[in-house]
Length: 188
Length: 317
Image 1 (cartoon, rainbow over the protein chains, first blue to last red):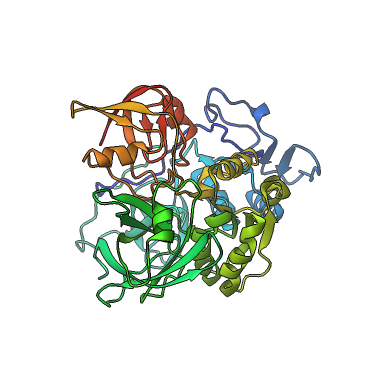
Image 2: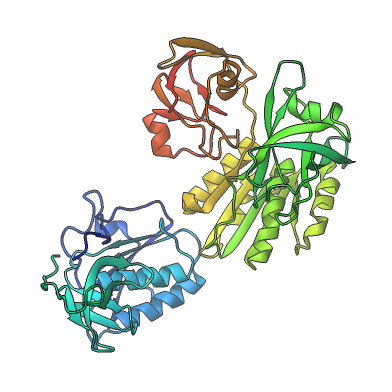
């Protein structure tokens, strides 16, 4: 692997100054150790959860909402952000690809760095973007993966792109044809 | 002439806008093109109102960025002028030469702003004017709110006449303008740009803070002069104690004493002049430092902030 390391660093979530605090959780429970010691769930005005369950029904007006999937939540979030006003703070907890997907949607509606806070407690598996065909390969566990789009064997660089919301993967022996480094498992 | 840090400018024309406002058209003394003045930029003039005394005053460039054959500035004659605006109004004539530092901007338009709210108090309209051109070019939504005295309204309306802006909102006096109403309910991605008297800027900043605007969305331009109690300052490493008078800033005193200190806006907005405070309490009057930095009390902006007590010890970076 190359020496350049450019991975996101996550700090435990603490409450910034804001009018409304919305916590988004991927899962039905908040994993331990996501919040700063001074923060509790009661400090959030609303909590939205992705519970990955088809029997979930919308609960209008409730401070805690459950969504059947990440897509379901994203659609509701975009609808909400389109009419939201200044003062909202969004906090996101989940897998790395999830939190940065939500981050990207928030930015699309004008939220800035001080208004979105993300925390990915587990980020062992990576989403990889092929530099050649631009396809995404998800749940990659090792430094060498096969591209889901073009079948190329990719070396996953230790560089996370916030723009593409993925790690960069490029042809394994592009620097020296035939030279293939050892595959190494990512650490969380 | 693009890379020149100091400019020799000739006053080509002076327009009298009203009893206290004059517009100066400045061209290069040598006839060359001038460096581009980016949106929100200011010129810092090195003025010699009296022999041997140099006053550094900053004024916003109100002419569009892309115009390079001249700059325009508007100067208000301050009732309590310490020399700068009085000098411009009473002594500067067409054809005179002036020295200024090349234009710099600490008040630029945020590239990701989805809506811009511009709030000007009186002559604070000048840096706002230079932003309008850029905001229109970006096709960003914009609201302009101008708070001024009755006597200035016509002149300020005339300054905005070229800006083809739908509905600038004029308020005659602070009491007729509710900052809370302006700022509440604005869409995500709204950025505020403020220039005007200290109390107005501080009020807008506080209301924005209460409504949940992040500080990175609040942009302030300040050229405020500072007056207050006299105090003494020790500069660490120089073994020297200097006295700051009631009507001068700490930065001006350092310059008078030949102590080199960095600066840009001279109004407490840009943070270029920040120095370390070794001992003593500070009366912070800037718009740059965060609440945490002020509470820590180990740095200050000498262009506007002063000692709370009678003495300070500082260290210049």
